[in-house]
Length: 120
Image (cartoon, rainbow, N blue to C red; front, side, top):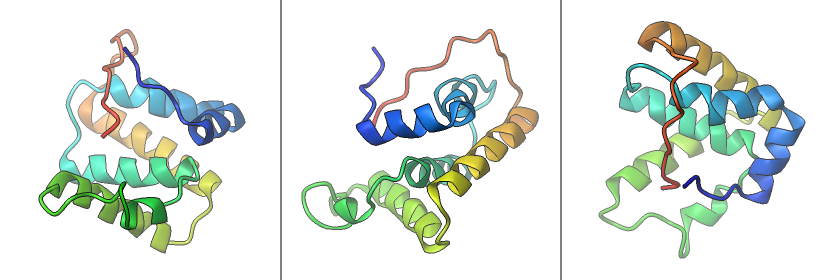
C-alpha cells in the first residue's frame, strides 16, 4: 500500500508533473538500485523540491535518534541541498536530471511496476 503524500508533496507534484513522474514512477523502475550517495542525493533533492522544512527534523521529535545512522545520513544529505540555497523548482529539475542519469547508468524498465518505498 503506497504511503499517503503530504500536502507539500501533492502541491509540488501538481505544479510539476515531470517531477511527480520522476519521483513516483521512474526512480522506482530502475533495473539496479542506485548506490547510497545517489540515493541520498535523490532524497535531499526530493525534500527540497517538495519545500519541506528541514528544521523540523534537526531538533525535536522528528530528529533522528542517536543510533539512527540512516536517518542522520538522510538529514545530512538534505541539509547539504538546503545549504546550496536552491529553490524548490531548481531542486525538482535537478532531481529529474539525476533520475535520467540513473536510468542510463542502472538501466530502466518502463513496464516494471514501481516498487513501494517506505517513508523513512
